[in-house]
Amino acid sequence: MYHSFHICWRRTPLSDLYYLHGRLFYVLFRTYRTVLDAGKQGPPLACDVASDASIADCLKAFSARHDHLDLLVNNAGISTPDHPDDPATGIRREDLLRVLDVNVAGVCAVTQAFLPLLRKNGRVMNVSSLLGSVELSRGATSATSYRCSKASLNMLTTMFANEVADVTFVSMHPGWVQTDMGGSKGRKAPVTVEQSVVGMLDTLEKRTLADSGSFWGFDGTALPY
Image (tube, rainbow, N blue to C red; front, side, top):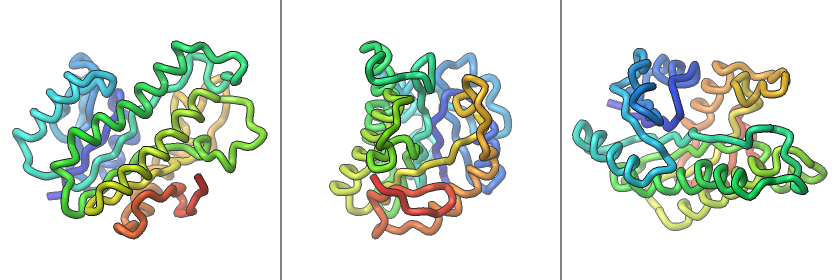
């Protein structure tokens, strides 16, 4: 059985599509209230990635059902309230720290917790963003907190890859997707959820240990850090 483990704040069309593509799919929810709307995925598990205690409880619940994990998808992510209007000259300290806590420290904590179950050819896909590419952000003035968090996430992916030789770690740009964040401030994202998920899964399937620590787009394009 293929045990995929997906980290998100709530049930989404993206999580439904993972399920439809043949994965036994566990959705992590921030609160038990949302768990009740789990739908047809694997048994839902509550997890607040900003809470070490919640992560430990989630690991315990998962380990009671399975002794290994093939794929961990770290997809929980937030931005500032005014995303993408977040210039460097106007960042509020508390907003930046909150974004970094969820988008980077949360990913680190979850990955550390589940790493023993991923040993021997497991995979970790950290959902990053093109906005996290330093090279491709030259001249940009928007979404500063989000960009900083995804650039940090890319480095975290590299550092895990450097240290853990038997697990493949990949950063993945999902595209500009038609989600709440993607459509904030009336913007029109060009990539559907299905296009993003299918592309990310296809791209991930082609990655091997030799690609660990690399950064890819959902369309299979290798991206610069």
